[in-house]
Image (cartoon, rainbow, N blue to C red):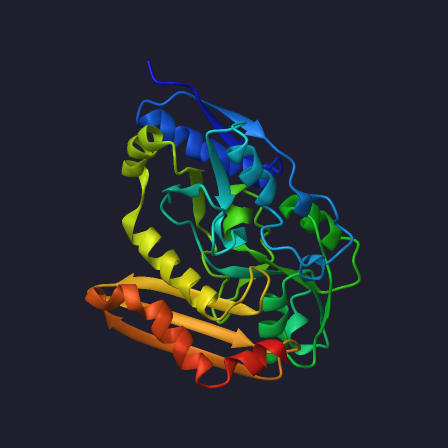
Length: 297
């Protein structure tokens, strides 16, 4: 009989949903498992915007520590929260098929677009892209897990908030009053999960590797290479999305100055045989256009 696999997860409703999906995947291939909820520092200091906390891996470091200390066998992460460099001794076990990637605007008033709206978000990327499109709007901060932010929206003096559609759909709490922001480029790896394990767990890694979705893994890898080449952290105002379209890979990368004044965009298709280069190609193109100054501005 297979050894019981201990699955580390954050304790939020969305994190637990994601961990249960991974648990179901393990069960399908014959692995018994249990969930081990672990508190993350990013879930605690809710009064502070994420970018002010100045820590990479704020939602992942406790799970990393639990892996390294042998408290769990695998950890489940929202991949967009994971630093592009995994800690020494930890590696990717598998990446499940990606969920929906879009951001949505949850609004109170249907006339929000035409007025001087106040919009709530704690994401520098979302705020910057929003202000680039709607310079007459203003931004306020909102923190908390998905249900908490929806609850806060009811009492905040604002017209709406920007959220990832994936979490709302996974928890089945997507409000009717929403608009899909198809012009907003998501965070690198948004909508994807990452399951990690110790590099030394060779047998476990071999058993879990068939659960990997190769197309998702390829696309999110290029998005994260783009982020890494730009030396941007998980909270930087950098968006990236790679998609396989027939025999090509379509990559969109977007850097927006804080406050939304200026923006650089890479939007290009390459043959699928060049897919492993496109994240680097995109980053170098934008760096040649003085992307660093925009990020530091």
